[in-house]
Length: 364
Image (cartoon, rainbow, N blue to C red; front, side):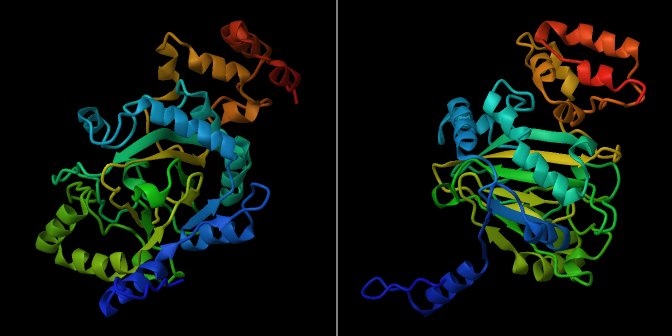
């Protein structure tokens, strides 16, 4: 909807035209019923490359996760903030973190059900490959090639897989951004390019028209990336201008909004407002048999060197489906025997694990 202002401060014709174009390019989240995605969101993700929703995650959990993140990350425009103005949390919120709210958010039943529906896989056949909280600050951006204040248009697959995503109708993973801030306060909305059918020139396969692929260097800044491409690869720069930036839609997130997208969806991050910090949780689930899709972090077992033993406690108290998301075999798997059940039980017994489902399934 175009909002008009009359009187002394009314915008001129060109400004009104810009406001209308900006509103037309906005992408608003769909409001869910009963915390479940529906057929419209599933079809949108499979056909257009994204599903953008509100009302999936309980508000109470979002508020707890946001509070834990705000309590940890430095305030905007402080020297300490520069240490985090990049990808990730410095391993501080990588699953399993000391924030029970962030861990619960990673494994939220509503989230798992949504991913299961999008990929058409049972939860036990999914695997977690990324979970971390990312802050993004406004006002203190740098201008070198690593700058992510305003990202270039890209797809995420190069740092998740050793291969190339398969053809469009056979997706292997769901990428997720859970927004713990509000775009009206923070800015930094995600822009993406919806796919428009099998003949969409933006999504011609294979997808190589970006920095960081083939022999082209990785450049994160939009300005630096496009300047490099205009000079060294003018055909790619022309493709990106005509098919990507001109068609991007801006996801106007609210606190608790969730964006589901794919490794082969064109998207980019936009600048955060000066003096603000936008916080999101990034999560990725993949199909269990896609072993070429890597875990983005050092590895779940590495956290068992921590003195607080958060991982051991989580394993003991998790459901069998939640454990399976990390590669822990489901009951009935060929790994399990009377001996292995007893051995694993001994490892986690002090934390209260119940191995009866695995023992009961022996021989079935």
